[in-house]
Length: 58
Image (cartoon, rainbow, N blue to C red; front, side, top):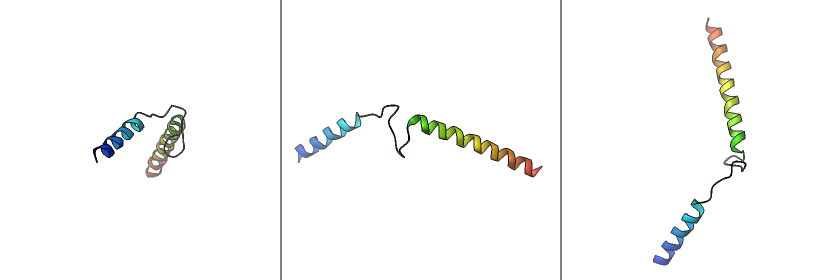
């Protein structure tokens, strides 16, 4: 049993050291740069929607 625990711990340590490069895809299949661009676009749309809602209330 201790050998199995050690092997599992070793496997977790080795895979935990792996990191994504800036150009590699992350969760969802987009790169970090693409994710930032999508976030920026979403913020722009949100601010435009808030502006339009404010204008409709007035």
